Length: 328
Image 1: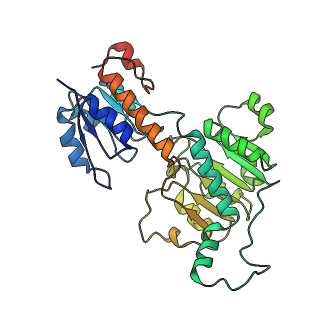
Image 2: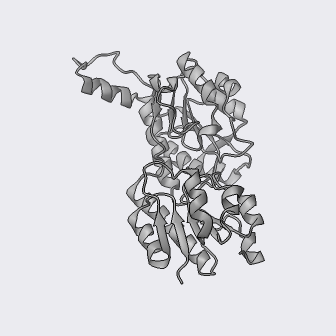
Image 3: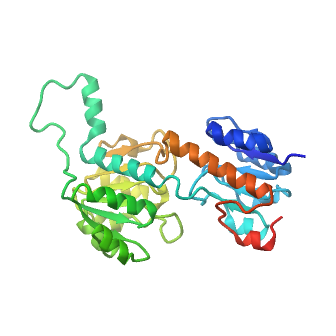
């Protein structure tokens, strides 16, 4: 008998077909995430679950799923999953690490450039019929070349941002819980306290995981340290930034601008005043949204799920100690 799997959203066809060829598969095809009540119902008799970051998989869900052996997240991050609760119950949790590193760095760099050179309002202006002639004061922005960039979080994506910044002859500052001397030499970076990074950077780009240490690590006090011309870029997780404090800093023109791929909450309510700001560039969490990367994420999630349900070690377990204990 084939194992039973529930997939919480349509994923790229290649990964979907891999799962369908292996397991009895049901897919939620709605645009929005499946309602929690539906997830609690569907997990009752499944062996594998393939959720997205938008699906909260906690102890309650696991308790409702007595046969569940693996949660294969369609994401690099897994803050939507209660990993300790899964480990306690012998449920494997898997993710898709490394796959979106360069694609997300590309998007972060695109946001940096768009915000610096006011690409989005310039595009709207040109399309509106307001563009009458070339003007010496029209849509003035900020130079990127020779500016100072501050990278908060020197993981894989932070490293790729540093590589891109070198191509623009930027001064590189970084802050991370772990100092990386070998990268400082290789990439010409300077390790500094967060306060110095915020005070001296023209562009501040966030690449930290979301945890208790990083939640609201950019708040009112941190924003107050930034230059009045500085631009904040966030492609990590929305709650890394105190969004109320960011709105106030942008609305009062205390910083130059911001560019966000992630928000808190996500998405913002349609009437959220932050959406009306002309010094904010915002996109709908598309850091990994290239055809190649999203397809690779789908195949990695499928490979993790199939391996775990076949009694094999999945390529990317988050809690490998479950394997050592034998799992469910």
